[in-house]
Length: 300
Image (cartoon, rainbow, N blue to C red; front, side, top):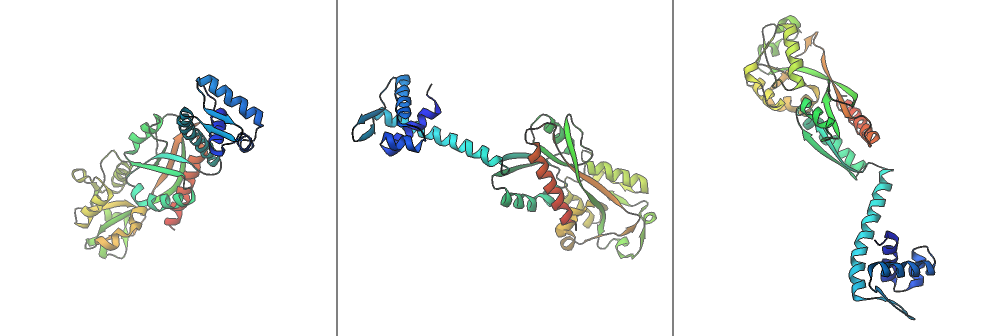
Protein backbone atom coordinates (compact mmCIF):
# COMPACT_ATOMS: atom_id res chain seq x y z
CA UNK A 1 0.00 0.00 0.00
CA UNK A 2 1.18 3.58 -0.59
CA UNK A 3 2.63 5.30 2.43
CA UNK A 4 1.35 8.63 3.69
CA UNK A 5 4.73 10.19 3.00
CA UNK A 6 4.63 9.07 -0.65
CA UNK A 7 1.19 10.64 -1.04
CA UNK A 8 2.47 13.86 0.50
CA UNK A 9 5.32 13.90 -2.06
CA UNK A 10 2.82 13.35 -4.89
CA UNK A 11 0.63 16.23 -3.74
CA UNK A 12 3.68 18.49 -3.41
CA UNK A 13 4.80 17.76 -6.98
CA UNK A 14 1.25 18.36 -8.22
CA UNK A 15 1.16 21.73 -6.47
CA UNK A 16 4.61 22.94 -7.48
CA UNK A 17 5.15 21.19 -10.85
CA UNK A 18 8.80 20.80 -9.96
CA UNK A 19 10.72 18.04 -8.17
CA UNK A 20 13.27 20.37 -6.61
CA UNK A 21 10.75 22.76 -5.08
CA UNK A 22 8.55 19.84 -3.98
CA UNK A 23 11.52 18.23 -2.22
CA UNK A 24 12.34 21.50 -0.50
CA UNK A 25 8.73 21.92 0.64
CA UNK A 26 8.76 18.38 2.07
CA UNK A 27 12.15 18.86 3.75
CA UNK A 28 13.80 15.97 1.90
CA UNK A 29 16.44 15.66 -0.78
CA UNK A 30 15.32 15.61 -4.39
CA UNK A 31 16.72 12.08 -4.97
CA UNK A 32 14.75 10.79 -1.98
CA UNK A 33 11.52 12.35 -3.23
CA UNK A 34 12.08 11.06 -6.76
CA UNK A 35 12.91 7.57 -5.51
CA UNK A 36 9.78 7.40 -3.35
CA UNK A 37 7.56 8.55 -6.22
CA UNK A 38 9.03 5.87 -8.46
CA UNK A 39 8.27 3.36 -5.72
CA UNK A 40 4.70 4.65 -5.50
CA UNK A 41 4.20 4.25 -9.24
CA UNK A 42 5.63 0.72 -9.05
CA UNK A 43 3.26 -0.20 -6.23
CA UNK A 44 0.23 1.15 -8.06
CA UNK A 45 1.33 -0.12 -11.47
CA UNK A 46 0.67 3.19 -13.23
CA UNK A 47 2.61 6.26 -14.35
CA UNK A 48 1.57 9.23 -12.24
CA UNK A 49 3.99 11.92 -13.36
CA UNK A 50 5.43 12.93 -16.74
CA UNK A 51 9.00 14.03 -16.12
CA UNK A 52 10.67 16.49 -18.49
CA UNK A 53 13.38 19.09 -18.35
CA UNK A 54 11.03 22.01 -17.74
CA UNK A 55 9.28 20.39 -14.79
CA UNK A 56 6.73 17.71 -13.99
CA UNK A 57 3.13 17.21 -15.05
CA UNK A 58 0.56 14.74 -13.79
CA UNK A 59 -0.84 12.10 -16.12
CA UNK A 60 -4.65 11.78 -16.32
CA UNK A 61 -4.62 8.90 -13.83
CA UNK A 62 -2.10 10.87 -11.80
CA UNK A 63 -4.58 13.72 -11.48
CA UNK A 64 -7.32 11.33 -10.30
CA UNK A 65 -5.10 9.67 -7.72
CA UNK A 66 -3.66 12.98 -6.55
CA UNK A 67 -7.16 14.37 -5.91
CA UNK A 68 -7.85 11.45 -3.60
CA UNK A 69 -4.39 11.61 -2.06
CA UNK A 70 -4.90 15.28 -1.27
CA UNK A 71 -8.06 14.51 0.69
CA UNK A 72 -6.20 11.86 2.68
CA UNK A 73 -3.29 14.19 3.39
CA UNK A 74 -5.63 16.95 4.54
CA UNK A 75 -7.52 14.54 6.82
CA UNK A 76 -4.29 13.33 8.39
CA UNK A 77 -3.14 16.90 8.95
CA UNK A 78 -6.45 17.65 10.62
CA UNK A 79 -5.97 14.62 12.86
CA UNK A 80 -2.49 15.83 13.79
CA UNK A 81 -3.79 19.32 14.51
CA UNK A 82 -6.64 17.92 16.58
CA UNK A 83 -4.24 15.83 18.65
CA UNK A 84 -1.90 18.79 19.07
CA UNK A 85 -4.71 21.10 20.15
CA UNK A 86 -5.96 18.46 22.57
CA UNK A 87 -2.77 19.02 24.54
CA UNK A 88 -3.58 22.70 24.79
CA UNK A 89 -7.35 22.74 25.23
CA UNK A 90 -10.40 20.53 25.50
CA UNK A 91 -11.39 18.96 22.19
CA UNK A 92 -14.25 16.74 21.12
CA UNK A 93 -17.76 15.87 22.27
CA UNK A 94 -18.47 14.99 25.90
CA UNK A 95 -21.74 13.19 26.60
CA UNK A 96 -22.94 14.69 29.89
CA UNK A 97 -25.91 13.27 31.77
CA UNK A 98 -27.67 15.80 34.01
CA UNK A 99 -30.63 15.49 36.35
CA UNK A 100 -33.59 17.62 35.18
CA UNK A 101 -33.79 19.13 38.69
CA UNK A 102 -30.48 20.86 38.00
CA UNK A 103 -29.42 21.00 34.35
CA UNK A 104 -31.91 23.53 32.91
CA UNK A 105 -31.22 26.00 35.74
CA UNK A 106 -27.44 25.66 36.03
CA UNK A 107 -25.93 24.59 32.73
CA UNK A 108 -26.86 27.33 30.18
CA UNK A 109 -24.39 29.99 31.43
CA UNK A 110 -21.71 27.36 32.10
CA UNK A 111 -22.07 25.87 28.61
CA UNK A 112 -21.78 29.34 27.07
CA UNK A 113 -18.67 30.17 29.11
CA UNK A 114 -16.99 26.85 28.30
CA UNK A 115 -17.71 27.35 24.60
CA UNK A 116 -16.04 30.76 24.68
CA UNK A 117 -12.97 29.39 26.45
CA UNK A 118 -12.79 25.96 24.79
CA UNK A 119 -14.30 26.38 21.29
CA UNK A 120 -13.34 22.84 20.24
CA UNK A 121 -15.28 21.29 23.14
CA UNK A 122 -18.84 20.11 22.53
CA UNK A 123 -21.17 19.21 25.39
CA UNK A 124 -23.94 16.78 24.45
CA UNK A 125 -26.26 17.22 27.44
CA UNK A 126 -28.92 14.62 28.17
CA UNK A 127 -31.51 14.99 30.93
CA UNK A 128 -32.43 11.80 32.71
CA UNK A 129 -33.12 9.94 35.93
CA UNK A 130 -29.89 9.87 37.99
CA UNK A 131 -29.98 6.17 38.83
CA UNK A 132 -30.57 5.24 35.18
CA UNK A 133 -27.84 7.59 33.99
CA UNK A 134 -25.36 6.13 36.48
CA UNK A 135 -25.87 2.78 34.76
CA UNK A 136 -25.39 4.43 31.35
CA UNK A 137 -22.16 5.95 32.63
CA UNK A 138 -20.90 2.57 33.81
CA UNK A 139 -21.72 1.12 30.36
CA UNK A 140 -19.88 4.01 28.62
CA UNK A 141 -23.10 5.33 27.06
CA UNK A 142 -22.27 8.58 28.89
CA UNK A 143 -18.89 10.20 29.57
CA UNK A 144 -19.87 12.23 32.64
CA UNK A 145 -22.76 12.57 35.05
CA UNK A 146 -23.93 15.57 37.10
CA UNK A 147 -26.29 14.50 39.85
CA UNK A 148 -27.19 14.82 43.53
CA UNK A 149 -25.52 12.29 45.79
CA UNK A 150 -25.62 9.38 46.15
CA UNK A 151 -24.33 8.24 42.76
CA UNK A 152 -24.18 4.46 42.59
CA UNK A 153 -22.34 2.69 39.80
CA UNK A 154 -19.49 0.34 39.03
CA UNK A 155 -15.94 1.74 38.79
CA UNK A 156 -16.95 5.39 38.99
CA UNK A 157 -14.95 8.36 40.22
CA UNK A 158 -17.36 10.59 42.16
CA UNK A 159 -16.34 14.19 42.89
CA UNK A 160 -18.61 16.28 45.17
CA UNK A 161 -18.84 19.83 43.77
CA UNK A 162 -21.14 22.00 45.89
CA UNK A 163 -24.03 22.01 48.34
CA UNK A 164 -27.33 23.49 47.23
CA UNK A 165 -29.99 24.64 49.65
CA UNK A 166 -33.49 23.22 49.47
CA UNK A 167 -36.08 25.95 50.08
CA UNK A 168 -39.68 25.74 51.20
CA UNK A 169 -42.05 27.56 48.84
CA UNK A 170 -45.72 28.48 49.20
CA UNK A 171 -48.29 30.44 47.23
CA UNK A 172 -48.22 34.15 47.99
CA UNK A 173 -51.69 33.95 49.55
CA UNK A 174 -50.90 30.92 51.74
CA UNK A 175 -51.67 31.45 55.43
CA UNK A 176 -48.02 30.95 56.41
CA UNK A 177 -46.83 33.57 53.93
CA UNK A 178 -48.25 36.37 56.10
CA UNK A 179 -46.45 35.25 59.26
CA UNK A 180 -43.21 37.03 60.04
CA UNK A 181 -41.84 34.27 62.25
CA UNK A 182 -42.19 30.58 61.45
CA UNK A 183 -41.01 27.56 63.40
CA UNK A 184 -40.63 23.95 62.41
CA UNK A 185 -43.66 23.14 64.58
CA UNK A 186 -45.82 25.34 62.29
CA UNK A 187 -45.27 22.88 59.45
CA UNK A 188 -46.87 19.85 61.09
CA UNK A 189 -49.73 18.44 59.04
CA UNK A 190 -49.08 20.60 55.99
CA UNK A 191 -49.13 18.96 52.57
CA UNK A 192 -46.01 18.94 50.38
CA UNK A 193 -45.59 18.33 46.66
CA UNK A 194 -42.69 16.52 45.03
CA UNK A 195 -41.37 14.73 41.95
CA UNK A 196 -41.95 11.02 41.39
CA UNK A 197 -39.97 8.54 43.47
CA UNK A 198 -37.31 7.86 40.81
CA UNK A 199 -35.69 11.21 41.64
CA UNK A 200 -33.24 11.80 44.48
CA UNK A 201 -35.26 14.88 45.43
CA UNK A 202 -38.33 12.73 46.09
CA UNK A 203 -36.47 10.59 48.62
CA UNK A 204 -35.00 13.62 50.36
CA UNK A 205 -38.33 15.46 50.58
CA UNK A 206 -39.96 12.27 51.86
CA UNK A 207 -37.41 12.14 54.70
CA UNK A 208 -38.03 15.82 55.51
CA UNK A 209 -41.77 15.25 55.67
CA UNK A 210 -41.38 12.22 57.92
CA UNK A 211 -39.10 14.13 60.28
CA UNK A 212 -41.39 17.15 60.67
CA UNK A 213 -44.85 15.65 60.51
CA UNK A 214 -45.72 16.93 57.04
CA UNK A 215 -47.73 14.96 54.51
CA UNK A 216 -46.15 14.08 51.15
CA UNK A 217 -48.83 14.26 48.45
CA UNK A 218 -48.17 11.03 46.55
CA UNK A 219 -51.21 11.55 44.30
CA UNK A 220 -49.81 14.84 42.98
CA UNK A 221 -46.28 13.93 41.98
CA UNK A 222 -44.89 16.40 39.45
CA UNK A 223 -42.97 15.63 36.30
CA UNK A 224 -40.68 18.66 36.61
CA UNK A 225 -39.78 21.43 39.05
CA UNK A 226 -41.96 23.79 37.02
CA UNK A 227 -45.00 21.56 37.41
CA UNK A 228 -44.45 21.32 41.18
CA UNK A 229 -44.03 25.06 41.43
CA UNK A 230 -47.18 25.72 39.42
CA UNK A 231 -49.19 23.38 41.64
CA UNK A 232 -47.82 25.16 44.72
CA UNK A 233 -48.85 28.52 43.25
CA UNK A 234 -52.36 27.18 42.72
CA UNK A 235 -52.58 26.19 46.39
CA UNK A 236 -52.34 22.39 46.09
CA UNK A 237 -49.51 22.26 48.65
CA UNK A 238 -46.08 23.49 49.62
CA UNK A 239 -43.04 22.74 47.47
CA UNK A 240 -39.44 22.00 48.36
CA UNK A 241 -37.35 23.47 45.55
CA UNK A 242 -33.59 23.75 44.93
CA UNK A 243 -31.93 27.14 45.31
CA UNK A 244 -30.63 27.34 41.75
CA UNK A 245 -34.16 26.85 40.45
CA UNK A 246 -35.42 29.63 42.73
CA UNK A 247 -32.67 31.94 41.49
CA UNK A 248 -34.07 31.80 37.95
CA UNK A 249 -36.53 34.43 39.27
CA UNK A 250 -39.57 32.15 38.99
CA UNK A 251 -40.91 33.48 42.27
CA UNK A 252 -41.02 37.06 41.06
CA UNK A 253 -43.16 36.06 38.09
CA UNK A 254 -45.36 33.33 39.44
CA UNK A 255 -46.92 34.49 42.72
CA UNK A 256 -45.03 32.39 45.26
CA UNK A 257 -42.69 33.07 48.18
CA UNK A 258 -39.91 31.31 50.05
CA UNK A 259 -40.92 30.61 53.64
CA UNK A 260 -38.24 31.51 56.17
CA UNK A 261 -38.57 28.83 58.84
CA UNK A 262 -36.36 28.72 61.95
CA UNK A 263 -34.56 25.38 61.99
CA UNK A 264 -35.05 24.75 58.27
CA UNK A 265 -31.56 24.02 56.99
CA UNK A 266 -31.67 21.37 54.30
CA UNK A 267 -29.26 20.96 51.42
CA UNK A 268 -28.35 18.46 48.75
CA UNK A 269 -24.83 17.73 47.55
CA UNK A 270 -24.25 17.90 43.80
CA UNK A 271 -21.45 15.77 42.40
CA UNK A 272 -19.88 14.87 39.08
CA UNK A 273 -18.91 11.34 38.12
CA UNK A 274 -16.94 9.64 35.38
CA UNK A 275 -15.46 6.20 34.86
CA UNK A 276 -12.37 5.37 36.88
CA UNK A 277 -9.35 5.31 34.61
CA UNK A 278 -11.12 7.07 31.71
CA UNK A 279 -8.68 8.34 29.09
CA UNK A 280 -9.95 11.91 29.44
CA UNK A 281 -10.25 11.97 33.23
CA UNK A 282 -8.30 15.24 33.42
CA UNK A 283 -10.74 16.91 31.02
CA UNK A 284 -13.73 15.59 32.96
CA UNK A 285 -12.22 16.83 36.20
CA UNK A 286 -11.68 20.28 34.65
CA UNK A 287 -15.31 20.45 33.50
CA UNK A 288 -16.53 19.28 36.91
CA UNK A 289 -14.48 21.85 38.78
CA UNK A 290 -15.67 24.60 36.46
CA UNK A 291 -19.30 23.63 37.06
CA UNK A 292 -18.72 23.63 40.82
CA UNK A 293 -17.03 27.03 40.80
CA UNK A 294 -19.69 28.67 38.63
CA UNK A 295 -22.54 27.15 40.67
CA UNK A 296 -21.12 28.58 43.89
CA UNK A 297 -20.81 31.99 42.27
CA UNK A 298 -24.44 31.82 41.09
CA UNK A 299 -25.55 31.07 44.64
CA UNK A 300 -23.48 33.93 46.00
